[in-house]
Amino acid sequence: MILATTLATVAIVTQNQVPLRAAPRDTAAQRASLWQGEPLEVRGEKFDFLKVYDARHKRTGYVRAADVRVVPVDPGAAPELLAIVRFLRDAPGSESLGISYAELYLRSAPSESLTAEPFDAIGTMADRLAERASTSRDKATLATVTAELDVVQRLGVGFRRVVRDGSTTVCYDGEMFRRVLGIPNADAPQQARAALGLTRHECVDPNLGPTDRYEVDRTRAEVLDRVPVASLDTDLANRVHLRRAGVWSGLAYGQMRRGEVPQGAAERAVRELAAVDRSELNDAGVSIYTDSALRVGASRWDAGPTPSRSAKLTVSVTPGVPGETCVLLKDAKHGTDSPLAQRCTFGNVWLGSASSNGAGTALALAVQPLATWRELWIFHKSAQGWTVDVLPPGTSNPTLGYVEFAGWVPGGKRVLVAREQEVNGTFNRRFEVVRIDTLQTEKSASAPELLPTFARWQDSAWKQNSVAMR
Image 1 (tube, rainbow, N blue to C red):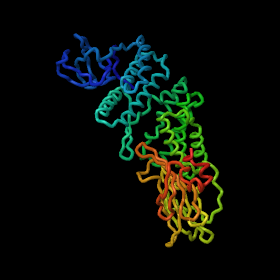
Image 2: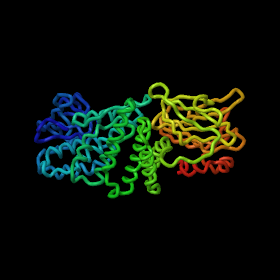
Image 3: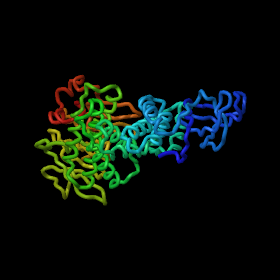
Image 4: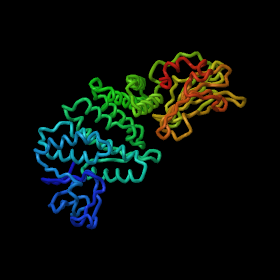
């Protein structure tokens, strides 16, 4: 960071759209519009106006003294500046102003007196400003946030934009958070905020290849594991547990793709989710919890022992083209050389999820094409032979969700499934009775006990292990 100038006195703009005028009069021509947090060089005073130099627009002009705060840049001003930073750090909508004061504090305070606090404050405010920029929808609000982003970027705070499914997320680059983690005396809450700011799911580049994505997730896990959770209050501890759950579920997916054993990572994801104190979650926390549960649900199949089932139908896998896995459906008479059916995928095939119905006419299998998206393959027999159909978590673009086998209904015509999906920030969880031949939902409810068929025939292993039953 920060400004290259070594001014002795700075005027900070305290409001948005403050006019920079050509003369010290309210009727004078407006040369520019200034935004809160902008630092101005003070060059004089006349009437109720200050003569200033605006580095952003590279011009001089006059601003009303009431619209700015004149701050000396010297060690004596440091305590007052830090007090203002502490106040503004937790004031939504004042991020650019708070960051500007924090920058002046860093220039004023003796280096030997610096702690993690100002870096934590800048990171926290920059992170919140990025979130405002990502979630602002109306033009007026977006214009204001965009101007404030420009102010803090000129102070040296970096941001980047991540485009996913046509939607843009503004992400803070995390420089101040990395500084916090490098300071030995940073306390547990400061470390937690830094780790959370550096590991946002929505700020991971969706265009990364499998190898690069795996390395990013490994780094995120290492950063989160440095946080002393036992020293945090319940709210921060919950947030760290939830972020860890999401990251470790992604690692389980990545390890499976690499041919490694993912059980440890998947179990870790489940444990982190279970460690959350749900009674202490506010509305935002409930949303984050659900997001993490869906991520864990997508990769949960290697998180515990595989259920032991006697089955008339089984599956095995064989390599296809490079990176592809082919699933073979077998019975007592049809082995690997002459399978009943075959289907290939570039996703992860969770063989431990395979479940055959009692009649030997259908088999359900979990297949995960993406780290946050798990589908259900239904192999089923018809008059024309064996067919493989894919049941997705929902009809929208694959983003965040899973669908899983929950039990067979006697008679060989129906299967029980549970689905969860996030669509445009809204989460939907359904329990369904589905026809095997058409994959059409016959009955659906928000809870399994609302469906008599579901309540009676749900699979015991599913009920015990599924995050849908959280």
